[in-house]
Each structure stands twice: as C-alpha cells, then as structure tokens.
Amino acid sequence: MINTQFKSLIDLVTAFPTEQSCIDYLEQLRWNGNVISPYDPTSVVYKCKNNKYRCKNTLKTFNVKTGTLFDNTKVKLIKWFMAIWLVTSHKKGISSLQLAKDINVTQKTAWFMLQRIRQCFGIENDGELKNEVEIDETFVGGKNKNRHANKKVKNSQGRSFKDKTPVIGMLERKGKVVARKIQSTAVEHITPQVIQNVHREAKVITDEWCGYSQVSRVYDHAFVKHNEGEYVNGRIYTNTIEGFWGILKRGIVGIYHSISRKHLQRYVDEFVYRYNTRHRSEAERFNTFLNNIQYRLKYTQLIYG
Image (cartoon, rainbow, N blue to C red; front, top):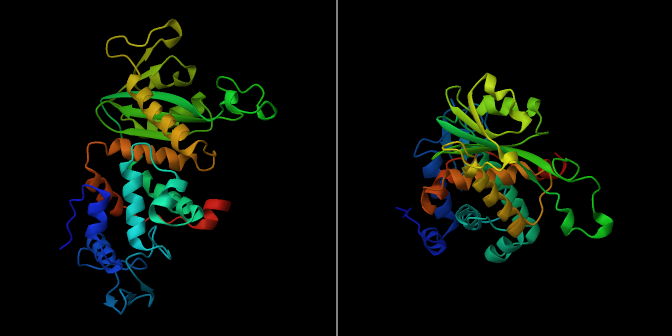
C-alpha cells in the first residue's frame, strides 16, 4: 500500500520508486478497481499485458494514461509527479528553466509539461460565488518603463489594451476566487462574467468603474470610491481581491517575467488553483490534481491553436 501522506518532495519520490508504482497509484485513483473504457464507459473491459486494457465494444486498447495529460508521453511518470508537486506547492510557481534542472529534462520539454499541467488547473476556476463577493479587474503586461526606447508602445498608459490584457476577478470572502481573461473592461464584457459566476443573492462589492454600472440591476451592489481616496468604508472594500492580484503579478514578474495573451488564461488558472486550495496540505493538492487529469493538451494545439 502506497503512503499518500507526502510532506515533501523526498517523501513523494520515496513513495514511487518505480514506474509501475506510479501506474498502480493512477489506476487506484482513477478507477479504484473498476476499470472504465475512455472510448465507451458502458463497455466490458478486458485486461491485457503491460498495463493495457481492451474495450470490448470498440476493440480499442488503452491504459490509465489514455485521454489524460500523460497520454503518449515519453517522460517517466515520476518526473511528471515531481513536476506536479513542485508547481502546486510553490506559492509563485516554477519556471520551465528551473523545472528542467530539477527533473533533468530539456527546457522545451519542461515548458510543454507545465502547459499541460496548467490545462488541468481550470477545474478550480469555476463555481457559483455567494455571500459577500469582491469584484475587480486588473491588467497584465505593459510595463513601458522596463522597455528599451525603440520598443516602447505609444499611448499604452492606463486602460489601453495595446500591450495589456484585462482580467476580471471575483472573490467570495473566506471562499474561492474565479478569474477570467476578458476582451475589455466595458459593461458588455464584465456583466456576463458576473452573472455567470456570482449567485443572484450575493452582495457584490466593486470600485466605481463604469463597467459595473449594470451590476446594480441584478445584485445588491456597493462600491468603494477609489477616485476620492476611499479604500475602506465598513465592509465595503476590495482589498481581498486586490491581494490576489498582488500574488498573481508578483509570480508573473518574479518567476515567468512575461506571458503572452494566448497563454495567459492557463497562468491565471494556475494561481487560482493554488489560492482555492490554500487550506489543503501539499499532499491533498497533489491528489486533487491527479483526480482531475482528463484534460489533454496536444503540442499542435498549444503552438497553433
């Protein structure tokens, strides 16, 4: 029986000394003795050699990695387990360069592994928020002061989208956060996100930005007047969601340095996952992730999709 109470990376590696021990653990988590075909869940399944199974209805063979982020991987599972542990337990994440050194793979392989892992983080970036919900928007990118003179972007200050990407965040106090990349901070892009993710009986708290003007028609809506130097008025404040933005931006600047608009949502999902599982142990975070690995990202999708 595998000890699942890992407290460190050393405990994790010790618990899985062979590739077969990793496979056995995945089978236990995914199927718990009742193997289900990814091609036809109603089909009878026959056990074959080398950890493979055959679906009777489709005659296709599969294994525990089929249809998951581990599908067709040439990297050993223990290295995947180590990568998952490192990215979920490090508060600000881990760069592909550092991961490549830690698990002895190329930087290109580490980058692709991290993107596949991030593809699964979206499982926590969802749900209906209730009670008191703080909502705020932020912009990722666009530090003109850090650019060489011939690379500076003109008229990119403030809410310009030329070199920045807007992200809206909705945070239930003492609960979860949901954050989404959006096209703009206009009413038509903010309001649908709020309606989709916030319960109608919740009390919504924002700043005075005009993009929230339609929220009052649906919710009990209060706002803090930042333009007048007001940041707290009793329970009317957005400090908690702004604290989350601080964690996100420190991670991006300190670990990843820059992120393209194309891949931004996956990075946001990563920080949301860690925030929403902050009360769980590293072992619980690890196992929660392994229970939700049915999101495969192909290299062609990542590069050309």
